[in-house]
Length: 110
Length: 114
Image 1 (tube, rainbow over the protein chains, first blue to last red):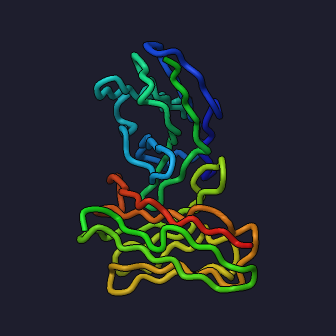
Image 2: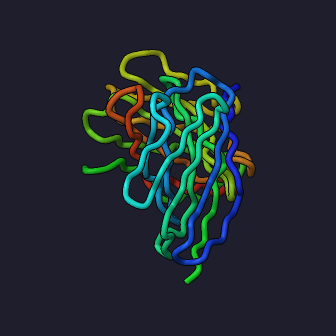
């Protein structure tokens, strides 16, 4: 119930391409879905977040798509850049602690 | 300070010893979280403090792990009788309130048990 399942585990994308990371959840009490970005040796930092009353949220090159009926959400990175190479974590919250997926390591090749 | 501060940044300890990890949250943040990140793994929830409420300890992996938060500010995570499987990065985060708000993470404490 409390799990957030994330895929793929790793992703290699060419510069300028689209990176897509998917997450799924079971607990319908989750009502906040953030994505965090982590660079080596650093703590995760919030990238973008969505609530279930909207189906899409866009901030610059980053878009979250949310499918409430399927209990799935995804992160799309448009025009991927080498500087986007990092580990990305989806998460979900039901008013207490954030529950994180296992992460996706993204490598953007130049 | 401007962000979440964790100390020490690195800790090497012998198996069986106790260790204390410290977290200084952002001033005014009422919620504080501890997570554990093992190599190549996600962030495993350990414990969560919110204001004066009883902490959510549901993620602590064993009774060797405990945490305190004094005065609603600084938190200490204590691991007793450390084992090699405790080796990981321990991350602390704080947020302005409990619900639907951004969690700000520290840089973590890398614990190595030898």
